[in-house]
Amino acid sequence: MEPQSQNLKTTPPLTLERFHISEEYGFLLPNPLKELPDHYRPWMEIASKLPHLIDTHQLRAQVNEMPLLNCQFLTGYKEQHLAHLILSFITMGYVWQEGETQPKEVLPRNLALPFVEVSRNLGLPPILVHADLVLANWAARNPEKPLEIRNLDPIVSFPGGESIRGFILVTVLVEKAAVPGIKALVQAVNALLKPSPDCLLQALQRLTLSIQDITRTLGQMHDYVDPDIFYAVIRIFLSGWKDNPAMPVGLVYEGVSEEPLGYSGGSAAQSTVLHAFDEFLGIRHSKESADFLHRMRDYMPPSHKAFIEEIHLAPSLRDHVLSSGDGQLLTAYNQCVEALAALRSYHITMVTKYLITAASRAKGRRTSHLPGPPRSLEERGTGGMAVLRFLKSVRDRTLEATLQQSS
Image (cartoon, rainbow, N blue to C red; front, side):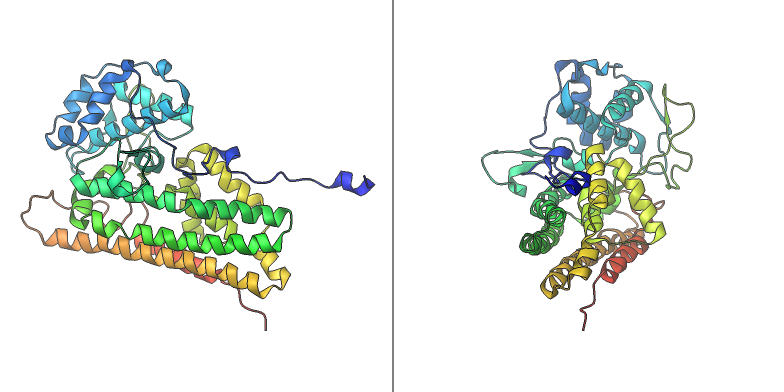
């Protein structure tokens, strides 16, 4: 062995397994549990009837009669995650049962205490997050058949009928479509650590195809989610108690804190996928957008957040592409960036349809079977950001990452 080699720091290859990310399902929880131990039957019974209990204004009364259950009988990650999923759905229903005009500002201790305990065990906040709504909230009707919407059901749901089902399950399929891209990203990082130009080029090409597939999959929202139902019925249940004028002070978790606590609502920005792509491609967002995105990482499972941070520490792909002088590599990099910008542009058109246009239609409805339009978050996402300004800034900064061909 040559003497200088002893001083070289060897970086272990990046693997998905190290961050509890599935080779088959990506950030989705593989085959989530649908049932908790019998001790937790009172939670399961409420969760199974949640849309009905909310629609008939009975949920708060049922929750108030619920026994205070001990979390000690939850064993393993999947049981903990199902408990978080169930308690987060019940919490959102309890707070927003009567809509934004009469939110409950105190969560009773029989719900607050176990929810906060399970949240601490998982390293998640005590509110509904993307990991609840989507990552752990799917079940295949036939495990032998491919993951497609006809073969899937959510484990727990809100009012909104087929539209809430479609919203959850299309997002599950978006996460699944990202799997080849996440694997390509890992391959590319390893091709930078142990230089392999051919591997890197192939990985970037695969990443582009995966991003394009994510965009196509997202398009299924148009087939399964009614914009008016999403806006007037579903959206309130994804809303949090931070940066939300309907609950300006926050929520008191009884028995946990006498002071109200503020947490952001569920948001696509809590999905690890685009954070990982941004870090890998070296895309830098404006301070306001970056601050919000970094805050959303605290709403992810800790191992997924750690994966993003690991990519951040990896050698810079942009620097490598620029210094390589390889025109093919530069083209492949730019194609990734352009595909990501196109996905973000498509997301803007979706938000315009499901939020901005639906809001203006809701204002024009005098009488309808749908509730009155929720006014407090009219131009904000459920995470609390001014949504169109944020999405356009993020898209524009993505496009700015395109590298110029050297003459």
